[in-house]
Image (tube, rainbow over all chains, first blue to last red; front, side, top):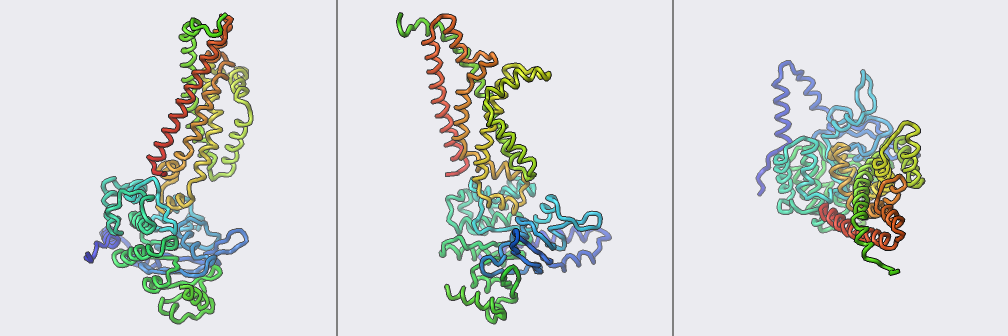
Length: 292
Length: 222
């Protein structure tokens, strides 16, 4: 049961590296440079809704395979960070970089201009997202949910996509339920299908937006277990907005506390939860822990 | 003089049934146009370009705010003054379709707007193209719930077909009137036509219900 699973992501990247290196005259230095880039970089990113500034000059680097948790009171802009990275929201200022390449902008005759749809589609292909309310396609089975994008976007054949989807549904423990429709699944099962669906696109970055907030308490564990498994078996950069402080502490490499559209404090889980420096962080943590 | 004379019924039957065929054909062709063009209108209406969507909304509003009969007259009688000679059948059925397309487009719009915004977000997150998102994700959820409303327009359009008589298309009611006029005897022909409208409407309603039930089941929308 606990046999290490094939590192899909790793294998694919290894293969990419081989093909690239196999080409003569490939500039090694450039490859090195890309590998040393942060996986995601927010550079002075500002987001406003009318007069309200939701995020104010956000600067945040996330390294390859890092797991970052974002916590903070509601309205602090934490979900907006994920939504901007998924291109569900346009930003008002700054640049977001993914894997060393600008996401929100593109080069045109030497100048950075706002990205067009084609550019957005290409770059955001490296990012997958899981939503608070699952957003499964209700008219498709679990399997079809996981096959739709690999077939229509990546161009996989139906059997290939089906094998991939079935594999991932097995991985999240829903191999038996693959022909069920979302309405026939519990909240925890729906969320696990949603995770499998995102993984079927082989993203390099996974975004989790309060993925357990809409679940009954007894179903939270099964979803968190799947995320733990991803951490163990895939090479993924993960960025999660969460209210599960215990999970954030156990699972992430870094925790960012957002307050009023800024990162008020960030650090290792031990440091942030054990010895918070910022007064706001202390207030927030004591309020959250008291409620438990 | 008897109130009801069966001999008139048998005499009128073949003559009226030709009209019934015209009526049914006009309804089917007209509705095919209305349901497809209505969807096109609704999709244009959803365009991100504000000018395009506003222009579409205005066109729909315009079509809905003027009588069908006037629109048919305009195409058939005013058109030739500008060199547009359109056969009566095409002008009539086409205008019937366009008129009802405006109503159907509002229906489609309601269906599209009830699809949860999270579905669009999932489409973006999975990088589906806009075309694929519409075709595979949004419309299969938007259309089944509005099938009954579209069906109402189907029946409504059927009952509007006598308007075609105004541009000399020999549909059923027109034939009944002619038959009555020739024989100085209206009751049988008009009653028969009324009976046919009733039967057709009831059958059509039943079909609409069956189709919408099937659609909702097919797409597992409870």
